[in-house]
Length: 225
Image (tube, rainbow, N blue to C red; front, side, top):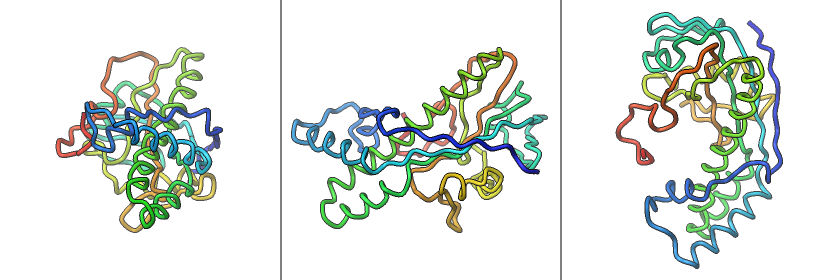
């Protein structure tokens, strides 16, 4: 089953890099960095913006949800958590997004030269891919709303019992390596490392539902809010 795929890009200044989110990844939680660290963070933001390459590939498909089973056409899986998220949906948007290899190169370089800078760049890279996914989400939402349709929160492999093992089929269906430069290691790690794949349910009726950390039942994640 060949999917109809579109590719999206964004300029560095189009994507919001949430500093508060980056600080959370760095372990600050409710604390604030000192003036020197804040200046270093801003310097890293500027360097990161020169390295990012925001790219994504997306496809909207028909789906069928029955009990704990979801049929994507090219893939059938069983997941209680994803089924709950997609309840009432007859379509879904699949996407894979990345900020490119430049961030990985910066982190590797400073990992040897200036570990504190590498740590900050790693956290900012995580915030950048989150910002890119948020922008894509809003673009999809705008199109859906024009058609009186509603979105469910995006849901990635690894959330709850949605198996990470489906990544090869998902990325292959999206032609993510050719269209966005994303590929997988044997352990299903996405490269570039600051990359995300996800499913966004589309329904003809709204539903109040949880998103992000609140939608995931994993309790041992160090980034859990």
